[in-house]
Length: 491
Image (cartoon, rainbow, N blue to C red):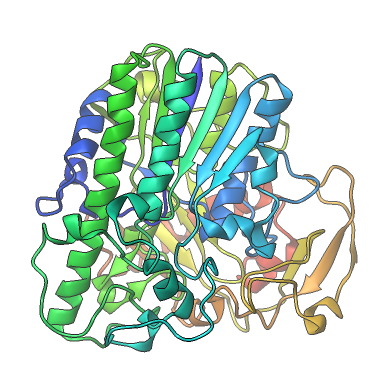
């Protein structure tokens, strides 16, 4: 038995045909939905990129203790557990954050790994003088490393996403008859900048004007034409993601892998393209365009296909699902729940889920209501707990000397295997966008009546119930006491 996980970054649920989109071409996602199960209530957990990946390894929320960071010495890593139990784990990616100081301990958990270079800010090719950059709508798109990399991709086969999927196809060509392996195929696309090849851009109308495929993280200030233009660029990249997904489905057909291979197709989060008058993610509350994610699973044991599942599931459930598939016991610290019963009979496995970003709003949903809780006053007290003092920002490198000067040893937490950790003052944190997110008020939404989250409701009874669910989940996660104080939830 084998598992393939195809993971995208910032894959938008609302831009996929099987989730109701009627203008972005994603026929292979529709093909997948006919073969696999489509999950209707899949939510993020820890945000953004690397916190989500840590959940993929550990199966537990980490955003209440730590911002963007690497795997910790006390973490249980799903691919490493596979490796230790005789399951070969291979990692193929163009997601360059895995290889920065702030995330550099993930890839070595696998049996083997391959990296394709050139995404976003990746300092891949040397260019001492500035590359040729066209006129852009704003300065966000004028990135030295990105345009240097683009110049080294003259053909479609040179595009980082295409090269990443080609490596996966090579793996399947060589290993489709082997048993007991896990392949994680992960592309940074369709994360911004929306750099699709011309073949896909030509499928969508392109407006005249300055180049615009890299939205800023702020309110929309661009013209309506510019907003529409960047949506077309994003659509082109989603269609490119779709075509490469089709190559994986073709390989599974060609090698008759469906009876022995679980297939998971997922993402870390979505992305705002002008909804709520905003671009991007992280700097504002995690509306459902960001937090409510697409998820497809084919489990050969149940053989269920072409159906939907309504049960509330989260990112933390995926490593638990993979370990259970290989009949490997879950570590005691893993909070995720295997999705076998959901796949088989849509069993409800949790009453509510928690999600958010370190130092920002903490959010809770039961599938109908979403409760976004901001700080009760000043965003303090706030501490990070770590034995790996690297971080996102400042070159995605080490924590600053000023932050490290505040560190002190903290008592072990329930999941640190008896190890003390460094407790670092994070009350002036800014690298995750939390300083802008906390400016938004605490809000409660009824998704049944207001699926677009345009009108918060005022219902003290429902809010009290959601607070109870939130506190229970925080306590189960062994959230530090100061988090309850910060949010005004301390007894």
